[in-house]
Length: 233
Ligand SMILES: [Zn+2]
Image (cartoon, rainbow, N blue to C red; front, side, top):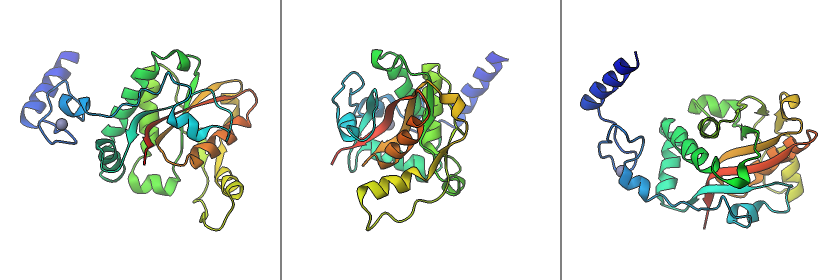
């Protein structure tokens, strides 16, 4: 059965080779989403072992967390921005899986991330998820969890409603408003657990903050954060 599957894949690949999502060259059979040349140009942050990285500095003082990291720098016009755009708007879920797998393979070897026990993703409102067909952060989190050998609870953290307009509000009102948009379905799952919250791109961090505050209300939880990109202006 397995040989048949490999053989079928090889034949399919011969006639319909997948193309690199960035340079559009035909991918080799062992390549996925990106060719090796494009993959080597990805701007890794190498943040995971650093306590004081840009991601953790941006979230510091807003809620207690153990570790915070991002896989790539996310700058205007960069390859990571282009890939994230394709993932979100061009129906290309494989990019989410690809990103999540890269993240998980790095974090599973990091001493700072060894105590993580479960993974959650920042949820999209279900209407947005219906429009897009998937939540990109769920795809990233699922692949990351698989690479780390950890459980991923895709339906545990839920977004209730579209967040109200954020204008003319103080920061603390904005945080309250965001926090009210999330709820945890089954808090028993997370009691006394160290959770890794996964999101696609870190900008202000308001959404992650709201999710973290919600999860920290569960007794004994600890939080770490990982995103694929961190916006650098
Ligand atoms: Zn390429």
